[in-house]
Image (cartoon, rainbow, N blue to C red; front, side, top):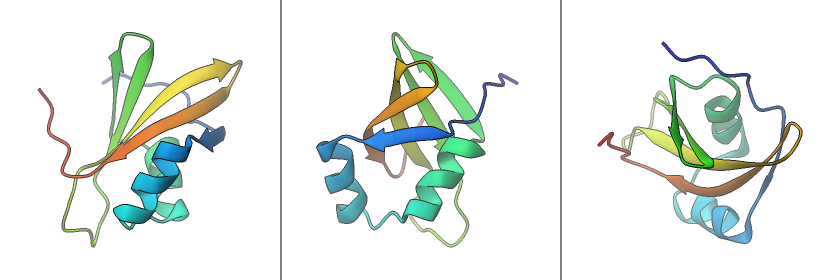
Amino acid sequence: SFMTSAIKKWFLSPHAAERMQERNISVAELEKVLTLPDEVIKQGPKWIYVKMIKHRKDNLLAAVVLEKKEGLWLVITLMVNFQKK
């Protein structure tokens, strides 16, 4: 399985913040996705961090991220009901 370092420093794009509210994703849930992902998928310059979150009916939760600077990541968007292609 592919392992990557957990994301420790991140910030939300305005779009991601909107999606977070809309999809009722808590900061704690987002933190779990970024720090303890079940899977990480590379897509060009972007990465998709995926995690199954207990008690959510709209799993899998996915965060699309882009590394901006050494160890600082931008969360571009958040998805629910994520399905791998």
